[in-house]
Image (cartoon, rainbow, N blue to C red):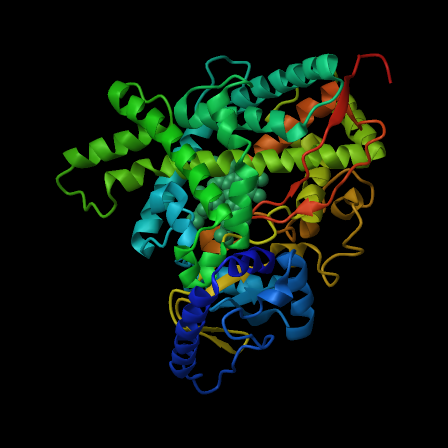
Length: 521
Ligand code: HEM
């Protein structure tokens, strides 16, 4: 965050800088003057002393999840920092986060009004906007029910248990073919580049009843830019925290707006086509079901409309957007870990060979028979913690936590990375070990341990795509592990350093894979 703010400060002229400084100092003094009193019996939040205007950005530096974890050791699980001019409460520690998000869920269920979030789905995003509680709740319910019904809808053939399974199996097989042919032609491949299209096709199937070729330029032009989206949405744009910066030119903000625009144009075109061909007797996908909800509502005299049609239909933007970047990132990391730990890759292949065999494709129902693969996925989520923070939260009223006063409208960061690496919760947290999730004989998962991993948030704002995400990660991985052996490109060391963002990604790289021939080791 600091690194993003400083270059921008450097590009202001001296006179502009002076005017801005004076304005900010007056604003800063006003803010101090208006500072809320602490109610009796409660304490002021601990935390590092902020500098005027910049706050604590100089201390947070390049990897906020690590610096804020280090600060939690000093100040405790609930503390306050200041990013630019905005106070931010940082929560870590399993107990405090559960207390806030579950026991006091209503108090912490809001989203902060951040400038950059206004560009996501034209400010109408379910996940990022500051919708009133009633509107957000109605939209969330609609999104959940649309997702559930289209994941569970019957497949067109008896070969699959449901449509979701059919989509994943078909895309998984296609991904295997795609990677094998790229290997033949080029001798290596960029894992994220191919995984992201396969995963995008699963959610495209559910949302828009269509799939795209791995060379479709329009789809590629924004799915491959999802890293840039995550960098701004995860870091917080400087203009989110120092308001006057929104009036100055910023390259990262321009890129962010451009990605959002391309994304919105892509989805809007498909939605318009759906409105044209909508037939209430043939609901093809999630977009149709959302349009149907709006149409039915118009016929219902008793309907108490509080959410506009636009806000109903743009739910599909959230489902599509959240549905490809997160899962592609998880799978891309999974392949990196398989390459980094070849002995684990062989154990996972052996488990599939023993429990599923090599003559048929894995299915969702195989999950409970593959504890090692399940442990691998859990350890992947824990160790990479590729969503280091949840989406920022915001308090909906004056509240308190662990005896500290937190005023209404305070921005709250939840440090998932800290929970997943807390030495009080995990033995040797930095080592990648599947054993931590398995019973002593290795045949079952250890439930107590599995529930400690935090990847999907908790409580009122918990991810609504969790079930689909877990199914996709499991089945894609089972298909890849059954058919391919992954390895590093000779002479190119594997770089597992994450690049900070809303979803942390590994650097783009080239890997190799060979097709496993049945009967050969
Ligand atoms: C591995 C995959 C995924 C991970 C790790 C993940 C994680 C998360 C996290 C951490 C949040 C924020 C929770 C909070 O703010 O407290 C979230 C929210 C959300 N996720 Fe996911 N997610 C994944 C996949 C998906 C999928 C596949 C969908 C939909 C198809 C989805 C839809 C959403 C939505 C709509 C929200 C916003 C919920 C709200 O604000 O009420 N996610 N997710």
